[in-house]
Image 1 (cartoon, chains in turn blue, cyan):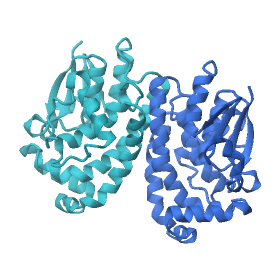
Image 2 (cartoon, rainbow over the protein chains, first blue to last red):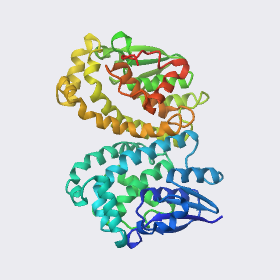
Image 3 (tube, chains in turn yellow, green):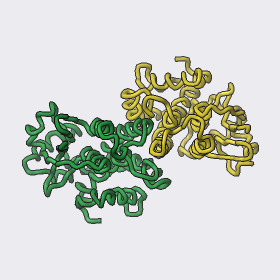
Image 4 (cartoon, rainbow over the protein chains, first blue to last red):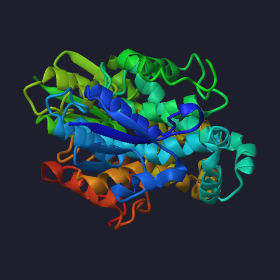
Length: 231
Length: 231
């Protein structure tokens, strides 16, 4: 059955969505081939069939699945003979915690650091929408948010703490082998790698070393998307 | 083989340590009996045998294990025929993430809200040590910290967000049945229940409902420790 993944695209064919990277890595983990369909903020007409306007969207034959967490569950349940994304019921439960933590605490910290820089790479036709929607979300012009960027480092550093601890004690968040818990956090940290004008992670940070391990998985799949700032 | 758990005690026999509650719940989950030995801040001579001065300490026959995370791993590996605390290797990895997150983000948010109120329940002989060590940690008198308590609500609310999301979507952090990921967070939220003069959780918060479920486990083991503020 043919699988298609709809995901967000920026200039230079950058795939910038942390949520879509979760799904990309999940597909690789499951060993499933997918056609990837780039969507811009402006041509959301093309995903109207899904009944909502967000990506990722997975289409598997006649089945349409939205939301990265629901897609992960769908892949796990539909392809049980392929390598497990979670590794059991408890791990799946705890992965949801990591997912909601990334959504509530990690991603909001990152976007405040990079949203102005993301703008440079947004497709020309998406710029108006991007600025309007982000300025509404943050309640101020993006330039002003960027000017107060230093205030948001603390939240980012606080969110990095548990990741740093864990990947100092074991190779992956899921232990000795990577799993969906890793792909969630990888999505979050691949995002600034692709879109930020300055590297957010120090080279000697264990989180950097972990991200390097993640970039190397599946024959360097994550690394094949070039960093905006060459390390 | 006889198991002994050394843990911290406050007035009215309150067992106040979030870390010791992790171990208490882990022992129950494993169906293991243990003699519980109360330790005060002032009589740490009694745990000198462990080569360090923190609780919990588990003594199993001739084996001495310190640190709640190491104790959980010890119990899992030593008693593999008893119900699994983690439910697999990936779940164990992810539980470490939850553990380090609770240590780095959740517990520091809680202690700032309750440390002044904890003082009221500290054993008389422990008060000097408690005040001195906490004031050194926070860099200000406890009364001053308490006066600025409102500033710390945001951090607590931010830490509650992922818990709230998860336990709204599934009964336990570990999915349909409780596991060590739940016991970690339960320890953190049992702590203010026992030691805070005001309830930190609203009654209609899904986190409150989850804590109620946790209090009911093992024949109401957690609930047998009375709340400071009757709900």
